Image (cartoon, rainbow, N blue to C red; front, top):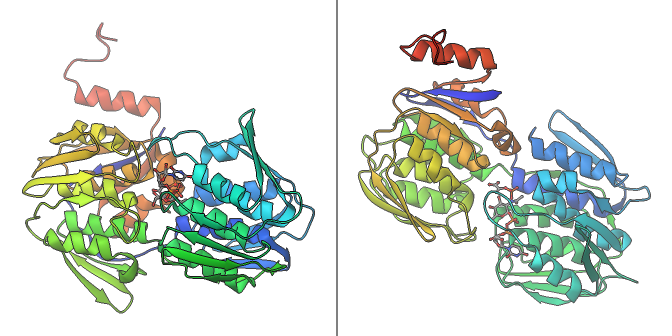
Length: 441
Ligand SMILES: CC(=O)N[C@H]1[C@@H](OP(=O)(O)OP(=O)(O)OC[C@H]2O[C@@H](n3ccc(=O)[nH]c3=O)[C@H](O)[C@@H]2O)O[C@H](CO)[C@@H](O)[C@@H]1O
Ligand SMILES: C=C(OP(=O)(O)O)C(=O)O
């Protein structure tokens, strides 16, 4: 079994470079399906499990894909297939983002129903409401969602009940080739939406207002392959910022864009962390003492839910009581049980976690319940007494490129190892005063 092993106590120092954003690249790759001519070249693509899953999804749709040295090439000129099977959608919900492009390109898509996941039930009703408003027929059965349109999608006015990132992206992509203008109201405003709109416009689409709550898309006849660089990953950047702060370190996070990170910067500054914009990113200096703060996760420009677990790790070290309220996902506190294994004082009341600190964290064997939870446990391990072993690395690999290696380069005592059962038994032997040769076995 693979584990990340963290020995707490080292301060982080130096520079770390962030990758292209996972949550920007996945919709951009899906959007490449819209090009009936030409090859798209997507740059700064991180080597993540999710990128490889998306590659397989496209390959299954009969699309030519190539991924090498951070450049992802897509040619969708051929005859496309319509189906994304459960094996991919199960691994990664963003597979559902191929529905909008397929509907626009070939008028039909059959995608496995995404199930629930570790952070909540995650319905897709807002995506479907958008497609239906544009004239598509949607049927659900046998674990699949099938959407089809007889002629061409029609422009429509669509009000989202919640500014869903995925629904905004899926509807935006479908609308690029619809007949007439589509207006998405209460649209998501995340930087990843702007990144997608820029790519669509480079392909010949007419998308205006991305980054605000109202997006207008004037349908065009055809999109062609284009070039696009993916924005830096604000969540990976934020993860290193928190890791620097918790260890009282001094780290330059290269590529971090302050404009994308305002809510995190504001909260970390309230806690006493010094953050300055430097030429190539953000410099973060951790204070001797951290102050408690209250946090409520919200759609952008509110505090990002994808930084909630990492901030909880930081708040465990603050002196006093902090409250984190999770409003985006219904069940994104799975990491609390794991933090408790590390000797932390956290109470859950409904959608809020009440954290009283500072906590004398102790190393323990813990499991990454989702990708951000995994990162948060490693961060906690950086200041815990003793050894923290983090398992379930498949989650971490969905969203972080070589997290252990990058932290190690900053001075952390972190390594990724393949532990065999024999090694585990050796560990137990050396830890237990009683011999394993005794009748305890
Ligand atoms: C690949 C990607 O970009 N993932 C991000 C994206 O996920 P994703 O696009 O899935 O997130 P959404 O913004 O759609 O979901 C936010 C909330 O809205 C609900 N909802 C969503 C759609 C819908 O049709 N009906 C509905 O009820 C969800 O269950 C959730 O509670 O945005 C989230 C919120 O910032 C991030 O945490 C994820 O990292
Ligand atoms: C929840 C996340 O991603 P996804 O929507 O792909 O599960 C995340 O990036 O934190």
